[in-house]
Image 1 (cartoon, rainbow, N blue to C red):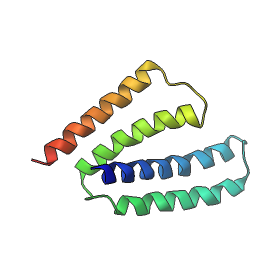
Image 2: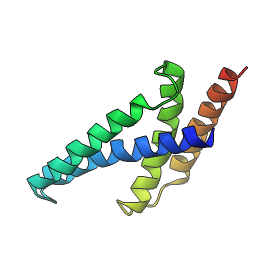
Image 3: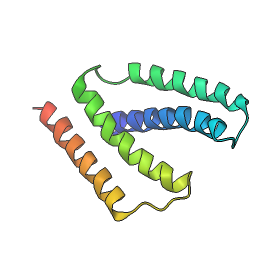
Image 4: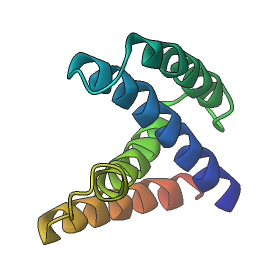
Length: 107
């Protein structure tokens, strides 16, 4: 379970970085050279998806919850925006839902 969670976290970071760098370029906060590491990051993201336990809706639903939580921490750590209590509650609810899905799949 810890290995899968770590894989989900790395996948989410690769996805966020691959989308964040082009956004910087589009908002004139960086050069077009940012598109190269963005493309590499998105390729890593796709490769990491192939390492997930199974390509199923259940796995991707659980990954989605980890992505939501990681995006909230990205907002805080990278964008410098403090999450609201509703952001944290929403991420917590998503992670709780993912835990229900993951634990239900084990039976």
